Length: 114
Length: 113
Image (cartoon, rainbow over all chains, first blue to last red; front, top):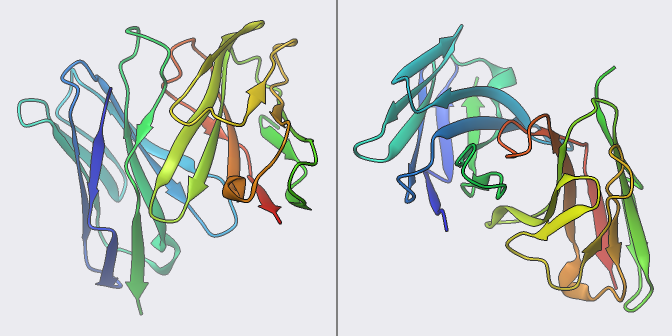
């Protein structure tokens, strides 16, 4: 089955700086890669996703890049703000190839220092 | 408002006392699933359902049961809870049958003494 590795487990950045979280996956058939943000006491919320037919996707201060050859994808947050502090999860799945759903990384605790 | 709801949000129980955590979605989604979240282990799938009366095991199904009698509901049943099932549980739903874009409920914090 799929295995997703996520790094780092904790990331502390100064407010206004950029943050990058990286994930690798094992199943070359995976073709859908979402990122979730989990705030304290809440369920994970989808913030951005990318499919394997594109290499990069951007939504305001958030961007995701995908390198299918190397089997890794990254989340980039620019101009970080205090409200970006949360736990972020990457995930991978094979749409149309089965109903196993998402395989998650173990999460990154992002801390924005004022 | 489109949402996934779970009840109860918090539950403390004792070993061996059967319990059910309910999950309901109002988005007419085909796919529903249950996850448990433990420190350092991320989110692990317990069971999933592609449609009514269709359920299958995820990565950590031991000690759990589910049912999908209606499209909107997907209860999680612990017939004989044990302390190692103390965890934070999330229900999620997805519009397709492959379970890619998933929307999560608010979570249920379960403690088994």
